[in-house]
Length: 121
Image 1 (tube, rainbow, N blue to C red):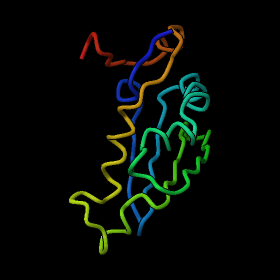
Image 2 (spheres, helix red, strand yellow; image 1 turned 60 degrees about the vertical axis):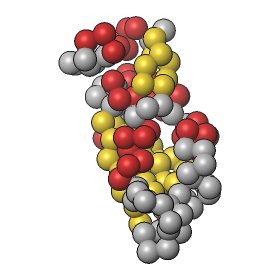
Image 3 (cartoon, helix red, strand yellow; image 1 turned 135 degrees about the vertical axis):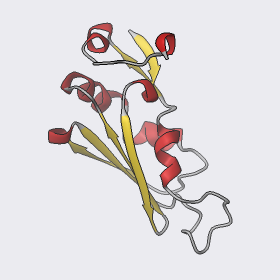
């Protein structure tokens, strides 16, 4: 087993609407999607964003796209027009999520095309 940050394994897309941030996490292979389903839970994402996301985190699975979508409520200090945060938009949540580390089996890692791990940035 290896412990890697998601930035070496996935792509993300994120955005916001009002006081809600959403982050979609995309796996390059079906096997890695299975690992994401096991490792990247709504509870872990809520803990990862502790202090930023004050409301519920809900996860939606999109297996045909090998994606997980996380909807984070009460995450933007009231939304763009009422927040005191200097960067209150949900776009930054994607790069933040990529700093989360997960456990991945070596056989799954071997299937990932063009893996950019810490040893071969």
